[in-house]
Image (cartoon, rainbow, N blue to C red; front, side, top):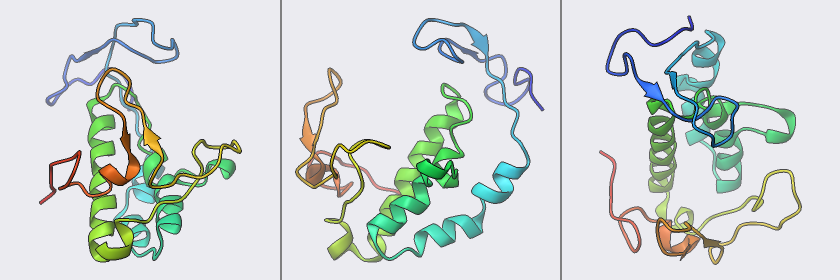
Length: 160
């Protein structure tokens, strides 16, 4: 593996950010070098089913995100193999889809259930439905409660 992507829809794609230069422009080809361990362990149907079977948001979130303090990958972290790679964005869309599917299994409590720290590895308090999300110049500020249901309020989309 490795090297510039040489076939498919992203053949000869040029990325302008990363790796390792912060937000400075850094033109380079799209490269991929997936270790065989990642798909087999972290992107498996078994791992998805385990995550979807969690009964509370706290446990679902921990399983989906991984345990940062022990460097455990899980479904979310294992997809951070190339920021700027179009697969990075599809990966995050799929995480959102999984969260929605998990919410749909028991919508009454799950559309109101949040937990976890505001920031990883810091004592910044826990997220609540009243926590404000600041999108900067992209969009107006909203509370988490306003984006818990993908078909209502600030959002308007669905997954098949």
